[in-house]
Amino acid sequence: MHKLSDRINNLAESQTLAMTKKSRELQAQGKDIINLSIGEPDFNTPDFIKEAAKKAIDNNITRYTPVPGILELRKAISAKFKRDNNLEYNFDQIVVSTGAKQSIANVILSMINPGDEVLVPIPYWVSYIETIKLAEGIPVTIPTTIDSNFKISPEQLKKAITSKTRMIVFSTPCNPSGSVYTKDELKALADVIIQYPDLYVISDEIYEYINFGGKHESLAQFDFMYERVITVNGVSKGYAMTGWRIGYIGAPKWIADACEKMQGQFTSAASSIAQMAAMEAVKADQSVTFEMRDAFHKRRDLVLNLMKEIPGMKTNIPDGAFYIFPDISYYFGKSYGDVHIKNSTDLTMFILAEGNVALVSGDAFGDDNCIRFSYATSEALLIESVKRIKEALAKLK
Ligand code: PMP
Ligand code: GLU
Image (cartoon, rainbow, N blue to C red; front, top):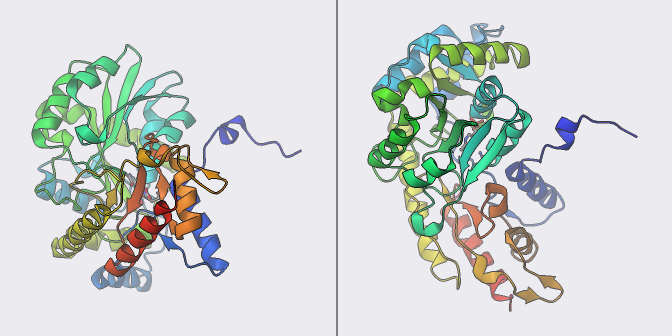
């Protein structure tokens, strides 16, 4: 018998990637699947960024870079934090990694001891919980509902904190709900956090630029929070660069140093070529990312309007990211032939089988009443996919 570690046996597969794998397999079999399960922009990486990568190859920037990233890139990220977020991170407080996913893993593995509790508001991005478990931490979730716009209150946060709580992990704009915390809401949470000297926060701001409501607000902006926050960001979403695999943190130096040590053993550094491309992205004027944001905004409105036509599909108005996270619990208890819908996973599988549209069940994000719909695709495909979903759901009685 093949013997794997308990660690890997206890690790759940990433549900976003699992659904994407499944829909690629079905597509390879010739099925006409619309894949709305992976959260990635459908736009191409802008040409000037691709040019920088080609130049990097021609200039032989093809060797190991310093573990926390090429100095010039870290300086460019430092300037980006100042320009966009009014945050002062010196270059030695920045660690560049192979995607924000690795940035988050570096921080959690560097800071969490076995038995430490980590608070995670629901709905959460799939990889938070498993990474916390990998570090033998205990994920403690905080529920929200569509009626509270999927945001936690300071009272809820305070109630969830115990003597073992070491960290909070959350995203704003949020994957999967699209919710965006306002400055006042962040300040109210910060006022609670600051009362607990050993409490740190991973503020995952990877959807920073995909914000329809106005200015992005960072949790680290409050002077008294700066020492407690690890700000995570990257180029995947804002610059349509998911495949380049570049993410980064800005953090207190002792945390950045720990992440550098961790990364030195795991990956040495991110790709030199991708780092040079990312440098162009973070230095560039923001018009490319704002154009994509405006396209996402238009698509959001389109999908929200179309979804109004689907009975029992309850949506809020997400202010950012490129997801809609409707409550679909209306369909629980309904059937079609031998298929009985008991939960969000059953409904996701039903929509895939009957509608040929791949979504992700809310269960993967901690909220079994919901389902995640990514609208990072063309308007034509969005119109077609909502039509298919509507027709499939109409079969359930
Ligand atoms: N955080 C959130 C909330 C995400 O949705 C993603 C998805 N890609 C990541 C982090 C990781 O991004 P990447 O590794 O592509 O930089
Ligand atoms: N973050 C994206 C998503 O939520 C990409 C897949 C992943 O990294 O899990 O779909």
